[in-house]
Image (cartoon, rainbow, N blue to C red):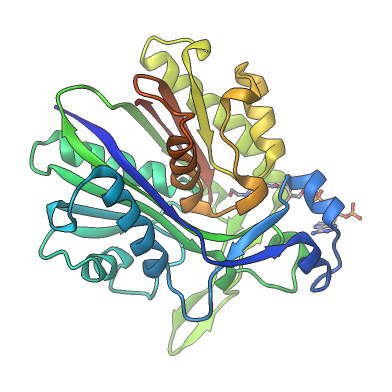
Length: 318
Ligand code: UT7
């Protein structure tokens, strides 16, 4: 018994914030942002728009693409670092907004690796035979947790959601998944604040040692890609599409170069979306599936790295 993706969907909020808009907000320049990160714009959620609102739009599109009705979903997993509230989970709120009754629904918190963690979890559940159709979503509103006065972080992130429908199959769709974490690095990339005694204790904003994250990301994205490729007795030349987490075009280019995968085989959306954390991989996957780049029978390698640190990969046969 295997699982296979049969539908994808994504949603970006209407408002676009360009680098030129940011020049009016902090001491930065379009030139710095583009050359250091590859980002030219990002989408920003409307006031009051929540991660579950973005998720519900992406989910409807994925359901339509899979030709399934919402009530055929029997498992919901949402990867998010920016949940609607402390509890209930964004997955439970999404379940209600989709009008689905009773099925298990929970969030996965693995920051920018969240979608790979959620996909691996759903795959494992489906392989037990107990669940047939899983909705797996990455949805983020980072505009709520960046300090808009801090130029070193606010230019990097954006809001959005991506979703996939994973279904039982006798043919392998997800060939393998590979998850890792090292909590030793928890201070390097964090939103350290917590709610206590009616107040936020500590910073409620993204804190990041950019250089440390950059070096770590390039190292582990190469390692975990090789781990996935070797486990399936494949070569890097067999990979038709590399769909990495979209944080920085320089990280993506370095990883592709180390793996010997040409940039023509790498899906990039960071220029238009910025870093949408757990949403970035399913957003990029949806775009490449819908524009016809990702084709039946191809090998697609998804990989991400983020706060924790966490990192992981999933190798798919499309
Ligand atoms: O989602 C997973 C987690 N995130 C990532 O993967 C991000 C990983 N890190 C990065 O992408 C990069 O480290 C950054 C894009 C965050 C920073 O790029 P960098 O090339 O590592 O720059 P830097 O932090 O070394 O800063 C270089 C200079 C500094 O000035 P000085 O000290 O050289 O005078 C910064 O103050 O750039 C300055 N700077 C800026 N200048 C204009 C930092 N942010 C900005 C800005 N505009 N927005």
